[in-house]
Length: 199
Image (cartoon, rainbow, N blue to C red; front, side):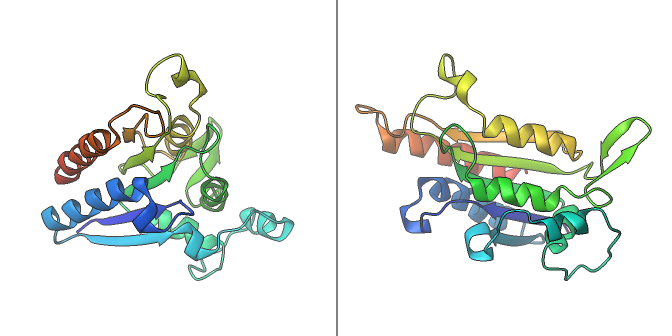
């Protein structure tokens, strides 16, 4: 049995989020095709994820095995999962701030990575991730692709934590006048269905 952690980072409610239309389709198909697996949903806005404080930063430097700790519990939860599905819109060329704050919570030396004589080494190897993202413009190709720093950031930081099996489902051009938005969404949801079956 595998544990999948579904990490949601959108201030919009599910019925108004195009991102969640795609990611929820992925999760529904995953549940149908992997009935033995556990899916844990983590809605960052419902969790009340905040920014790092001096007190939290002190905890990052101490050994702690308390899996119920209000901050470190997220790093332990992340480390103990086998698969990850991130769902977030592209906001101002990057991820929503709450997702960056969550990454700060889970990037803890001694839990998700460690410092060695060779430098930092990720401790989350053998795991895989999918990022579901929606974008108003066409950030899948140049010239706008160079401005896209959300998916690129997630791929990089997860690689830092040891996760190299990373795929992206992106719906582009959703706010461009004249685009067939429903066709774009349908293609993204079909991609999500196909990927979920083999994830």
